[in-house]
Amino acid sequence: MKIFTGSAHRQLAQRIADYVGVPLGDAMVDSFPDGETMVKINENVRGRDVFIVQPTCPPTNQNIMELLIMTDAARRASAARITAVIPFFGYARQDRKDQPRVPITAKLVANLLTAAGVTRVLTMDLHAQQVAGFFDIPVDHLYAAPVLLKYMRERGFKDSETVVVSPDVGGLKMAAAYSQALGAGLAIVAKRRKSPTETESLYVIGDVEGKNAVIVDDLTETAGTLTNAAEALKKHGAKKIFAGVSHAVLSDLAIERLRKSHIEELITTDSVPVRMAEGCTVKILSIAELLGEGIKRIHDNESVTSLFEINGGQAKL
Image (cartoon, rainbow, N blue to C red; front, side, top):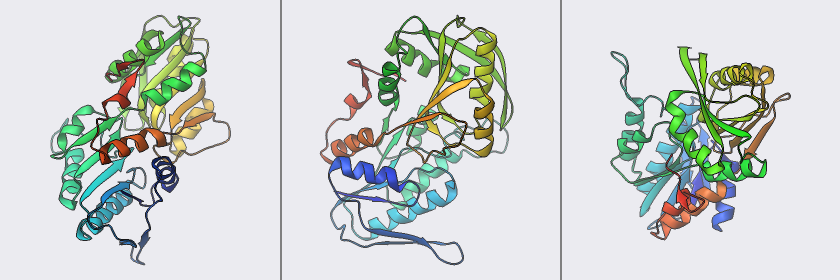
């Protein structure tokens, strides 16, 4: 087994390699003066099981190109199998043609990865589960829920005094799974998207008065959805408000909104490098063991199903 990484998130790749018990592979990833990506694998990978760890977070296009070029380098060096480990899959939100003359970019990226030589994908919390079906190769889709739930239980979010909140209709299934696992209540905030960076919360369905609210979502980028939901929950009498997201791709606008919001703590994972800023309380949980265990099982041709389990039952998120 060989584990390599590009420049997207070397710290996570190192943690994964440490868990698996193999050294991080020696590969040079740099840029030519004109911005072209330059890759060279500095060790023998002939006949090896190669894993390339590379979340496609900002700068998204640069990180996707690094992943494609590293895959091509490994394929031309006669690697037996190449697994792309993509903790955060960029472009997953562009998964359908919801307007005239727009692309389905998630499918395009899936095609590019397959054409480059990727033989399997290991990813986590896709924005839409159907994206896994865009690939013509096997996809192992893991969930951050076991990692987030462990911390939430330690914080005491596990009784009738807690309500799990979906910030929109699309996330209701995920929120229901968290609610069931924690033994907590369930609520939903209905929203309307006004622009790519701005949403408007309309109303709250469910009893949140006097309770600690935990807003769960798969991704936050501008934090508009989270902060608007927190505002609506506060108006409806919620006591303390927390947020748990799998991927925190925080922009400058997100940091500014979180500072001014009612959210006391943002709980997330290290699927992408998370920006820390003064005035924002962010708890970062590592998914290195989760992904590392997935890598070990893929390498040994074992089942990864048990990695989804919560309290002995599968997390049907």
